[in-house]
Length: 289
Image (spheres, rainbow, N blue to C red):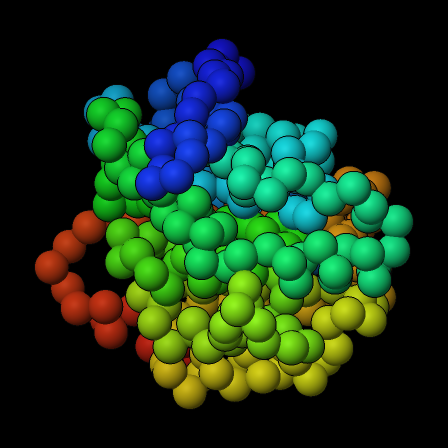
C-alpha cells in the first residue's frame, strides 16, 4: 500500500507532544475489498466485503492509537500500521512526553509502580488533544473518529472516550479497570467513566492475566449493562498478559479479526444521521460477549 508516515507534534496547554501520523492513500472502497478478500475465517469470524462503502471523497475515518506501558515501541507502530492498512488515518501520541518512559518494565510490580505515578488528568487531556488535532485535518471524516488503547493505553482510551462525544468508537485492549488505591494522580478508576461513554465500546482481555481478575471484567460488563452501553466485551481464555504483542498466538489472530469487524461495523461503514443513539441495530443485545 502507498501511504505517508509523518512525525508530527500535537500542541497542548503545557507541552507539544510528539506523535506518529499514518495516512492511507489507497481509495477506500478498493482497500475494503482487498482486505476482505485476503482475510481468512478465524474462530467463526470473517470480514466480508463492504459493498458500496465510501471514503467520503478524500476523507477517511480516523483512530487515535494509545500505546502500552512500553511507550512508542515496535509493537505499537506495527498495530498502527495494521490499522492504517485497514483504511484508517492513525495518530499515535507519545503519552510519556511529560513523564519520560519507564526505566524498569521487568516485573508487574515495577510496571504498576510506574503506572500509579502517572497523572490521569494529564494523559486524558493529551489523548483528547490528539482527537482535536485529527478533527482539524481536512482529510479526516469528523463523523467517524475513534480511539483505541493497548494495555495501559486501553484504560486511557476508555477514560478519554467518556469525555468527547465525537468519538464514535472506544476500544480498550487489556487496560486496567480499577486501581488498587486512589491518589491525587488517580482520583477515580476507569470504571467510573463508563456511564459517560457515548460511542460504541469494545473491550478485549487476557483470560490468564493475574493483574486483571475475572471479577474486574465482570464489574466492567455490569457497569456497561447498567448504563445501557452498546458494544462487546471479549475474554480470550488461556491468553497470557499482553498476548496481543505476540502475533504467533492464535488469540492474537482472533482478536484482530474481531477488531477488524467491530471497526468496520461501527466506524468504517458508519454514516452520520439524525437518528437518536438508542436506535442501535443490536437493540436486543446491546452488550454481548
